[in-house]
Length: 480
Image (tube, rainbow, N blue to C red; front, side):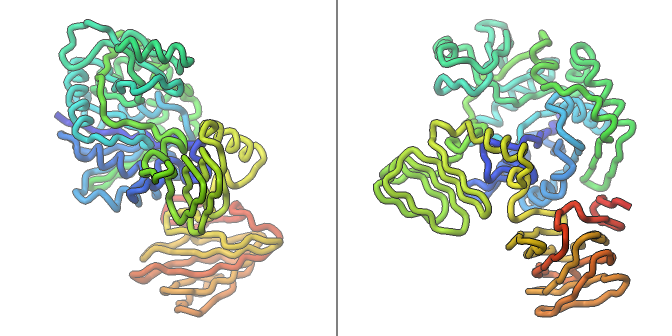
């Protein structure tokens, strides 16, 4: 029996700012053990019985970043597929696209296991047992959810009400889905014993879920199927990639899989489970991953405390000190500092909303930005100048490009650079440099086997990242 985990990687995770940002969202957050959430999701899925491929649905801007994260952990060479969305269209569109893709590649009898890229599950054995039960039910045509046994009356999650008796061997029939309740209702749900947190994980037989789309959300299925006909595909051994066409995808209704199918179908079951699940939805949840000291403080990075209790501090690259404070969440990154009381952890999203409305770049990018070819870090940004540290991976290449408003001076710090500058090709070694005038076509390549590191000094009237015209590109980003 073929099982294909489908990893949905689309959320920003605004409550985890300043680490989570639009160009570096929550699934890529590194946890205390050194792995990030999307890596953990991939590994968790890869260990399941019967898995023949892992399919990831993500934004097209995150493809190369996702591939890099998988490459470092996919020791077995498990086949990978990707569906690239030009923009978010909610989970119904993502699931429908995945089902159509899997019907084409694996047939209607295959099973798909839908997982969020940014959740944490700490009991792999219990998870595998729950998936086995889910596959059993899905084989009978059920749309299967995973119901997490509630540990306390949480008001931030949706709930699943299950039938007390229904004759199913592997799970329980779902009576209804309940929106995030108030505290009184949540307390009643926990006391009742047949309510479960909705984990947002699902298991379907491909043909069965497509039939349910036809019955309950035909507009979603038709719009996604139409988009498929216009979309670009790339395949090779153990790899496939479908880039959804933007104009067609914009016509897909923006609706969740819960509203589109799960709340409308009479063929929905749930697997009650206790798998160590967390949606890592706030800095409070992140803090629980770090052991506390004698005063209840949890620290990541270099931190000193005096007379401080029950605080969480995460700091990058510099010392943080707490004196006489309690119940604080402090997150310090290269370009932004968050300080909030634990009781207001959910309100961080309002800061992100304000940054976005004000056009502040801190909602989108970190000081270090990942690109398919490597990274760049903004060291200083002043009036008519910007200084960056650029790292190019071995054998990687930036696009052949041109800038209208800025010139650039490149100085090699380590490694070797092959540079195209206004039609001339030159090789630069450590401590050598070149100057590129505005309007000149240029390209930077790393022909070596170690990272190329250089300092770039930009100068000009406008230094925005959108002042770039690409003529040739190895990563499909050409403008001309």
